[in-house]
Image (cartoon, rainbow, N blue to C red; front, side, top):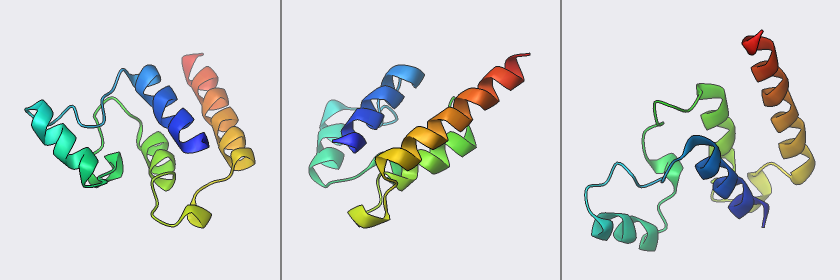
Amino acid sequence: DLLVRLQMDAKILYSLNPFSHMKTPYQALKAYMESKSPSDFPKPDCVLASHWDFMQRFWLKVPASRPDASEAIQQLKVFLSESRTSAL
């Protein structure tokens, strides 16, 4: 599923655990079991606001409201071109 893939990619890209702000594994497990999503928590400092805003759309409760694969690919291309431009 695209959502799972993007979440995994985001974790790898940013070296994140979406529940890393929690102090114990029990708290993280409880949040997971309660179907909490990373968008229920504050944006990590290491993630750009535009990236976080886009990622949050994948965690919307109504699947039809989430970006489809073509929109995700297009937005990732935009982010990539922006990162190349800012690196110059």
